[in-house]
Structures are given as structure tokens and as C-alpha cells.
Image (cartoon, rainbow, N blue to C red; front, side, top):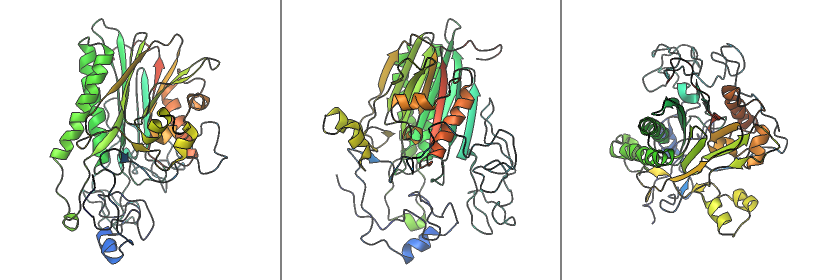
Length: 423
């Protein structure tokens, strides 16, 4: 199905060359007025409409390490020690990826370090920041608190980072530990990746992760079998994303003539209940199993809904050939109002030894695609330190180039009993 011709749309700022989102009115890097720039310089030939039914194109360009010499061990680039002010990339330091005065870390309630909403611009140091997050004096966009997020609860930890090439974080996660009817713990993790070619993809990932977690918590607490609970949670997440299209914002004046794609995202979840591990997914976000005993075989637990996966499954291309193709990251399954029909995938496993489950977006697995490669970059003490492991995996992706948003949740298996007073 073809789309109506659209007016030329900028994909990069003509001033500073920062990558742009289809809904941006101002550059997130330099604050340039994109409406004026678009009318002044129209790209030759206009912009082709994206395929809308068979696939969704999420990203462009090379997602692999920029050079063959990318570190083989997890690094910490861009991830400062918690609470250290003035360290490279730390809160308050030049070039920090999150706002001065915040730590970029969420506490048990999900709240982040708060700053005065009417704060001084970090770029010009004279203008005040308006409600849209831009300086009223110089027009610079200010760092968003979701540019770097961390959360740890008994049995699971997660970290999300904007990466080095995108001007906002369109990933989201939701994690918790709850109780089953018999009082034993259930550990839950949901990771979502916003489809960058869709409008408001950051809202889609947030709505999907929150909706899926709420559904899982209610179902598991009621004694619903984990696989059934996972299937229903993905459908509930899909409805939450669909609702965004129904309540969409009105287009800005200079974009009335343009069409907006429905908000969309991928989803992957993991549930640990006793000796059972259940995963569910739609799209190309993944779950991996990494045993403590590195002599044992690690495993990838999900199969992508993507062009590359279809080519490999059909025997038309090898995995290396498929993922080297520019169409590799065109997804064939997603959550969104323009998805034909959401078909949740679920699978259950009973690992016979301790280890960790790694749930992540392609911002990480692009740098460690195989289960063996993922196991090689997971620290040996991952089960003892899930938050530090999640941080190091994000750092590994940033060291490799940070081409995409990066989100990872780490779940030790088997789940440990929650401490006193924890749910």
C-alpha cells in the first residue's frame, strides 16, 4: 500500500547535523527552527513514504561497532560512578546526558532527583527553560531526565541510556518483584523499544512497558500461569499503545499537510517464578540466558520479528548475510494502531543451573548478537550484582559506538526471596 506524497522532511539538522525525529520542530542539538530550514532547503526529490504494512523501518545506518577494535570486555564509557559530580558524563558536567541536579537514577518509587522546573539553561547560562524543555533565550533543548534511567528492586535491575547518536531516549523499561498466591516471589521485567520512524515512539514504549507490568503483576498475584499472564500482558500493552493514536496530539501548524505514523514499539518481557522462566515478545527486542558456569551453553530465548530473521528462517540468506543487509532491522511485528494483528510470542524454560536472564533492546544486542558473544560480555559476578551488570552492558554498547538507545534488564535466576517489607 503506497502513501500519499509528502513534503520534504529533514532527517538531520542543516546547522549541526544532529539526527532528527519526524515530529521535531526544533533541533535537539542546537535549537534551530526546523520549519524555517525545511522551507528554505528542500531535499532533492522529496522524501519517500515508508512501507507501512509488511514492515516498519526503525533505524538507518550501521548499528555495529564503528571499528573492528571495539572493546571485547564490558566498559563504562559515559557511565559515571553514582553520585560523582563533575566526572565525564556525570550530572552537572559539560556534555552530561541528563539535567544538572539529577542523578539519572530512579529510586524505589520510580521518582528521580527533582530540579526546579524553571531552571537556568545549561548552554547559555542566562535563559530560563520553558515547559517544552527549550531555553527561552538561546533555544537549546535541555537534557531530559529519561536520557539515563536506572532502577533496582530485589531480583532485577535495569538501566536505559539515550546512547551517543540520538537526541532522545525512545526506550523504556518497567521492573518489579511481587508475590504469588503462596507467598513465593515472582520477578518481572518488561523492556520496550520505540520505533523511531513512528511519531511519539517514546510515549509508545512508556505506555507499553507500564501497561504490561501492571497486567503481569495483577495476573501473577491472582495465580494465573506465567505463560498465560505473559500473553495477556502483551495484548494489554498493545491496547495501551493503540490508545495513543486515538488521543494523538493535533499537528503543529506547519505540519498540517504531513501524515504521522501511529505510535509504535517493540516489547520483550521475562517472568521468573520458582524454577520456571517465561519470556514473551513482539518485535526484535531480545532475551538471553547466561549461566554462571561459562563452560555451559548460553542461549538466545527469543526469535526476532524482522526481515533478517525471515530471510534466515526461509534459508534464503545466512545470518551474517541477513544482518549485513540494510533491511535487516525492518521489523515485521510491533505494537501500534497500524499493526495488522498483534501475535504475542511466549516461551517457557526450566534452567538446570544458576545464571542470569538478560532482557534488552537492539541497542545492546547489535554489539553482541549471538548468545556466546552476550555471555562473553556479561560479568562473571552478574548474579550477585545485577545493577552493576546492567550498567556495564550499557557501557559496552556505548564503547562500541552507541548508535542507538540502549536498555537492558538483568534478572538473577533462580529468584531470591525478597527482603522484609518488600513485595
